[in-house]
Image (cartoon, rainbow, N blue to C red; front, side, top):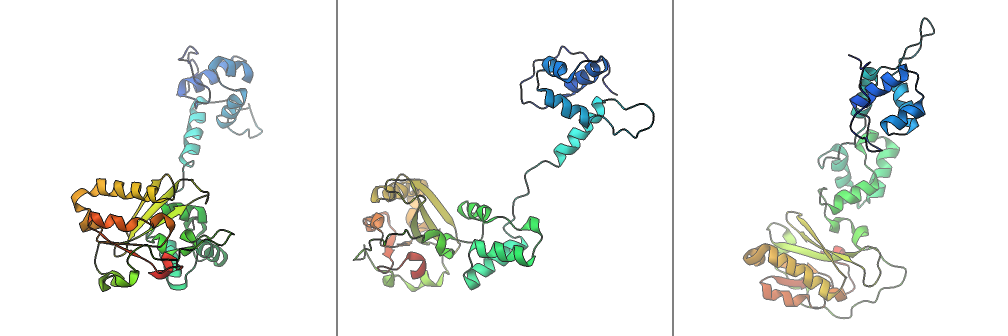
Amino acid sequence: MDKEHSITNFTERNKGQHLRSEERGAIQALKKQGFSNRAIAHIINCSPSTVGYELRRGTPTYSGRGRKPSYSAKRGAAVYKANRSRCHRPKSIHRNSRFIGWMVNMIRTHGWSFDACVGRARQTGLFPAHEIPSTKTLYRLLWNGKLPLTLFELPEVLNRRSRKKPRLSKRINGKSIDERISEVAERNTFGHWESDTVLGRKKSGEPAIFTIVERFTGCYLSIRIDSKTTDGIASAMKQLKDQYGEQFSQIFCTITTDNGSEFAAFSAFEALGTKVYFAHTHIPLGNAL
């Protein structure tokens, strides 16, 4: 039933708020009384354009015969509801979707990047357009641990090089990766982790991310640290120790990292019960494992 006799003394409306049923009823009643859009907008506390859009929504198309149709609050509400049902965020990409499965295979088999996978899928039409996420979305899913991939399977993420030649460490910070037991390389047992740091803007003193990935399960943890320094690494390890307590040494049996200056004192964490190893000098961690 249309609201031809709706009252106009309703609770005060906040600007920017969507129209409610009583306000649509007021628009219908006031319009029949000859009020202008601007006058109606002043009464219900909204912009004149809002009233104009609502009148268009709730007024049927004129067929050219007979009397011109007038605005109906009931019709306006129905059109609004139908429009809202189509206005929503797209469904998230499932980690087991066809595109994700194909992309993971291309990355692991051919070493492709996210850009290459998205570009090839769109160019060849391998999947419907709505099933192919953007590269930005894929990176966001990767950082949130929502893809069946680890950071170490995408070296371009971790090994972005600056224009200047980096200063390379001339010595190993601790025990070499060659001293690890064979089961670490076989990836058949839980408890062997790989750690690295990621610096977004690559500016000294900027916050960084401490990452650690379990080799057997692909379990990925990331901790924000104040800076890419030994103090930042110590803060991240303290958080891990506080979180896992007495089980720390059982969960983190070994940790392998590179020889970056931020890991210069990393061997000291063997006191927590874990064994620490370092990749070969001058070789990025992703290429050494």
